[in-house]
Image (tube, rainbow, N blue to C red; front, side, top):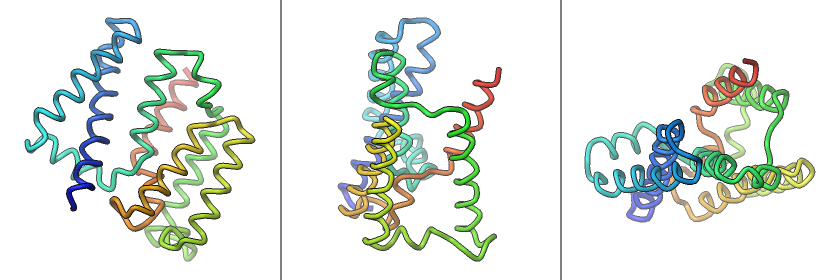
Length: 190
C-alpha cells in the first residue's frame, strides 16, 4: 500500500471511529455535543494509535474500505445533528433498502461464482464505470438523494486516482452494508 493509500485508509478509519464515538456518546449528550466528542475520541484515537495493531488491524479487516461506509457515517452524524439536512442528503424508504439489500446479495453471489453472470468484472472498465456513475447520479437527482451521488462520484474519483482497489465496486460497496441494512430494516419494523 502506498503512502497516499495509507493516509486515505487512516482518514476513513478515523471517520468510522469518529462515528463510533458519536454513537456511544449520543445517549448521554445532545447530537451536536456527541459529534464534537466523537471527533475528539475517534480521530484522536486513530491519530494517536495510527501505528498500533488496533488501527492497522481495523484497516486490514475493513479493506478494501471504499467510500461508502465513511460517507454513510458522516451522513448519519449530519442528519442526527442537523435534522434539516435530511431532505438534502436524502433517505431511503424501507422498500428501497430491501431492494438494495436483495440486489447487493445477488451481486455478491454473482461475484463469488454462485451465478454465471457477475457484474463485478465491469468495475474494472472505464466505459461501464462511467455509465454506472452517470446512472446513479441521475437516480440520485430523481430521488433527491445527494448521498447516493456523492458515493458514486467519490468512488469513481478513488478508482480513477488508483487509491485502493482497481475495481470501482470495491469503492462504492462494502460487505458490511448487509448487516447495516438488515439492522436498519429491523429498527424500522419495531
